[in-house]
Image (cartoon, rainbow, N blue to C red):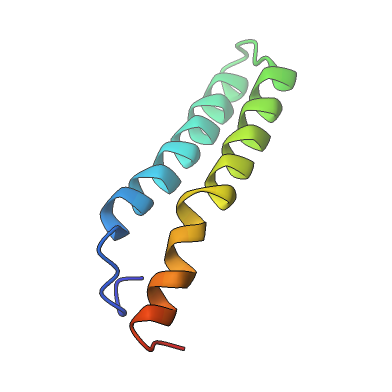
Length: 70
């Protein structure tokens, strides 16, 4: 995305980082013996992933095509 000059790269990266932070925080809680609501975590990650590929990821392909990048 950076190499192609995609204008939404910062927001796109922020979404990926947010999802990774959810995983990191949950892993840290589990490592410290704290309770992690696995069902809630997994459902949230699934929903976030589906929203991401159905939304922001759909903007990237057409943008590449419009700019002749293959």
